[in-house]
Length: 497
Image (tube, rainbow, N blue to C red; front, side, top):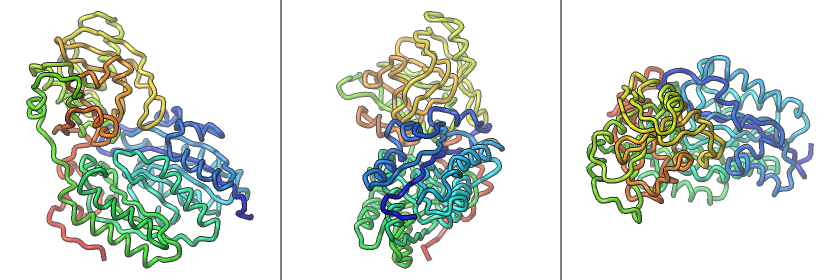
């Protein structure tokens, strides 16, 4: 086949697991708006995902794009046995008719999908696609990709997000497609990586602030060097108990393996030297409430409390109520709003109806090893079917029956039937609680919330709670990770060699 006007197949499978979250994730989590075929694959992300960037780059280069299938869930517990084989078969079946008819394949992946029957989903899938299609395969990944040797062996055409919060999904797809096009035009991409024996909570990984922005600045400089095609720093989803878990520095060069390894080692060394600074500091809930115990000032925005340990976008269950319980006891000076997952409580509110006064035990219904319920009494002031359009990530969402219960004068509790990602504040807007008009806003996110909340906030405070995404990683029951691993082994000495 010629590469004057190459044909490129596109497919996607996105999911981020949390192996400490209870239960398993079923097939229904993937059969959402992103469960698409044909041309719908290109629009499933609303033009804001990596597929959109990859397709636009291919078209700009005169290539023909052939969309096949996509599927994606948000984040959640380990994927149930049997689900990944179904998704794998579907993706491969979508590509198989194109064997011998396309010059390359682009895949939109996450990098932290773990199933009961396959701990390294993306490594397995990359190998399977490469074997089936026998053409170059490029893939884009989340910054929290759990990078494995199997992934690196399957293809050198790997590009990961450079930002946290993730605001470069489109440009990452562009970079992955540029790698693929470069190879089709005669480049000789080679990949090198250095695994860094450390894991860190997401709250400390913000690429806009030290210490991580220091590493990313050097990475950006590497991209301008002759011979360097791309580079990524994968900070790993830390709430996975799987072999090979760690940060990874990945560099792709044009036929220069020594340069790729030198630059990967340089990034790895920079990351390791900053390991103690990446560990996130948390504020006790009482201290956060005390900080917010001032006169509300709408012109300055709300105090935003990040409940990262119950981060739904990190796979937690959203049923933590430590912050809610503290707010219910506090002498609030302005509107406070919090979201909690509790199917039974949400349905009870729906049955009671608008205006009903209810006493509920909410929370602690899913991650019972971390959370206990709390009793609240209040008025049902809003009822909703729970469907809205998320902006981050870009997708329609359905969290089921949703109610707002006003407790006392100021506390508003949003109760959802299913967990709601809180990287943006679209659910709050959906139920009429604009966070810009609030005094305290709770978002269950481990740092990623700052893309939307920080611009409107008077202050952002990451509060100390328990949950499946606890930042105190050494307290979690890791059994399968490779040791030694910082901070589980705090005295570990290491250098990239």
